[in-house]
Image (cartoon, rainbow, N blue to C red; front, top):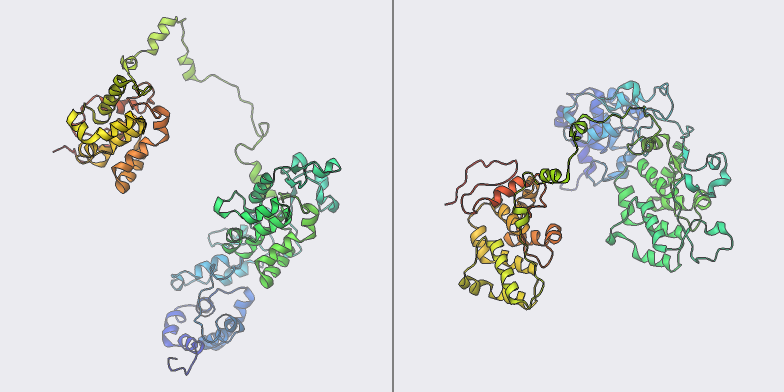
Length: 585
């Protein structure tokens, strides 16, 4: 092959007929399994039908491995996909739409461990498809298990054969439930397609290009004056959610607002966008993709195999964009939505309706409830006072176990920058809160003179002054370098939030910030957080929030405040015991 005497196709043929391939993939297996592995190696897929298995089984039974290799490599499918110069490859989800009838076996065959499986899968599964439908409703259990996967069959060997789904023929029609008055069902009354469902169905959005210009009330009955409301409804219907700002089609929105295009053309543009293609086409097998797109654009599931086959034919011959055009240009779309109505959900499958009505919170209060006698729980009875209590008695019970620190608390807040004495007191309180001691004048002169001047001149707020103290070299030296991260987090919440850490989740969050971005980022995360702003605002020095702590956090904060910081290295963390008793050296 390197000399150009033979093509890649002939080289693949000789590899398949080699003694090594015969020894590894033919002799250890029965003919059915050897045939399946040969399909994987030479055509990049699994067998597609029972008839195909029977045809190639006859070939391998009569002519052996060499005849099977020749039949596969000389087939028109091999020529179409690989030609003379392409090495065969696995034609999985990333390359083409997958068939549903051999889905489970084909995914197993694509696995690296497929040659270690001795039991054939395809012929046994295909044989099960020839059984008649089970004796049950054609859309009951096992036949249409998910409302969005009509026609999709996922055979699994662990399933009970008596309940495995059986394929439907093209004449079987799906049962759909109309969302609206039953008399307007399009099967019994095709002329009622243009009738809106009213209060029995989905909300209808129509764009009234000229508000108030309608001659009769019916023309603008469901119209929306706000174009943005209609555009939002279009996005939610087509994509199933609101898009991110960078994903929105701004040019099409402007054209719709200017009246250059109709709602119908706007829906067409959305459906042909790259975002929609990735959501409902590229990542799905073709039957499921058709079902999703049909429900998004036409407002109902497909009726059956005959309808899916027509769309499947369009997809195979013309592709994704032709499918979108076929749905939007269909007579049903024109009659149901016209040019100015956003598509809405018109029909549901019985399984879909049941899944919505059977969810908790959506079941009516009068459905399936039994009469229960209301009785007062025992713990409420025990909590009811048996005697008449006076106001002083109640207050004594309220204050039971509460120390006088609740009343002794003093809060320092900046009100008037012109009051020098109050400002000096506030600055001293900030030093005591952050550093837990008074700061000597020479240290203030060396490190915090500029910071104090900016506060006195009104250039920064008290919050920014506190943040500057926490980011200083002195704080780094005294409360960061001597301690492990967990202790640093405890001290940080004590100094800047006036409490101990709530739980392990908060410690893990701050530990990630501290380990990845450092001390300054950790302090900024606390000072600029919602809790700091709600408790202290811009002009209040942090303080111990004794009266407002939740009960679960109170004992830890009590322990943290009732001992000296440098007394020992004990960690005050809920539900956490240190593996080693760390002591400061």
